[in-house]
Image 1 (tube, rainbow, N blue to C red):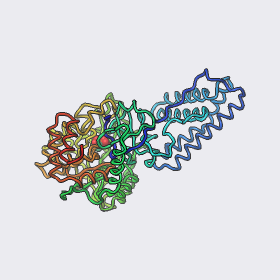
Image 2: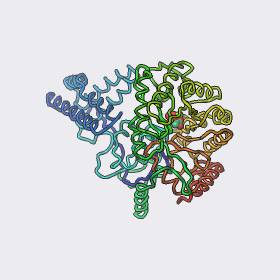
Image 3: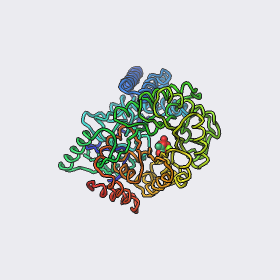
Image 4: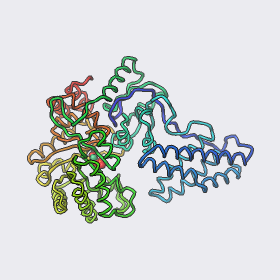
Length: 547
Ligand code: PEP
Ligand code: MG
């Protein structure tokens, strides 16, 4: 069975499906004693609130915040009052919970924005309380002491954020795409994942599978020999090489990390990243209602630069808008935000935000001595590249680059190269715009498959354009984290690869097994392939991998 590879590594284990939500009906048998029913409901809410708090204590970062807030929702007196009123009015306990939750969720939805997002947390609370009352498994991650592959239609970020990688050894979703949040979080946790696998619906609970998060294949009911082979591969991956990225014949390929917080930077250092190739600054400010001041920004950047020390850090200026809205920018509503005023284009409506950010980056670089480069997202034209490079130089920043994620920029790489010092290819948005395929759409996941030969052809074009200047080319989209595709990128002439910190080990190991010549042959094979499927087969053959 094939899906789309979303987080590298291989897993073997029984499939367990994400439990679905229990259903209540007004026709369920009524309880006889109203007071006893109310006290059952109260106990169920308390139990569920306590479970969320316990999970929150075990979690860190955004997952902990989300879980604490959800615990508070489960303890909300107004919600319980509504449930009590429903039971007194002759309603049945579990169904009274469903109705009270639906009532409040509707109100939250009507408020829109962040409030509407709380509605789905509230529904999760309701489903867990109902499951408690009915004595059935709660929806969500099944309880199991035995490691398993978690299968689901799709996963909410809150589900993925609380996963324990020792128990959930693989993720398999029917929907989702390789650049979805599930994929990004799975990589951050180091859990192999295959997404957009419609055939998965036919896999019965507890069926043994081998899941290849690097190639996208799912094998049903492996033989004992195959199982042993996969276990051996997992052990080999666990003892993979360390140190700087290089091919077997010594061609250096710096392996850099994509980070969005100090915690990511810490992890990057622990996992041997040679620097940061993409610092997504907007992640620091997603919940801000007012613009962060220059001093606040300087403090945040300083913290991350200090963690990286002497390792180089490439900071991307705010890539706000579209899938990363920043409330304080007060952006107008747009029909097609992915094609709208976002990334560097925001400086046409609020240049001050860019200038403040550049001065904060410069101040933090000076305070720490960390070698800092800056780059702008969503650059389409030579004028935009020139504008950014000029503003960055005026702010005192010497090494300036642009992301290549719009086909126009790729086609004119030879001209853009005269304006900047480096290119960083963002293959997530580049695929989105190259194939005209929304990166958030799971039904278009096949077009976001990095093995699509048109993507490699576009990258080759960028490398060629850069070579007429002394412009370095890196890749920082999700495609760089696919170990075999990373070798293809090297063969295409890409000099640095930047990825989620947990993907670095797999890419380092893959590079260490092949020569630069093999990488070049794999790149040529992909460029010559007719389809994405042919490309992966031909490249793996050129790299000397088993079929
Ligand atoms: C990209 O588009 O490939 C990229 C790295 O940026 P982001 O995923 O943050 O849009
Ligand atoms: Mg992008």
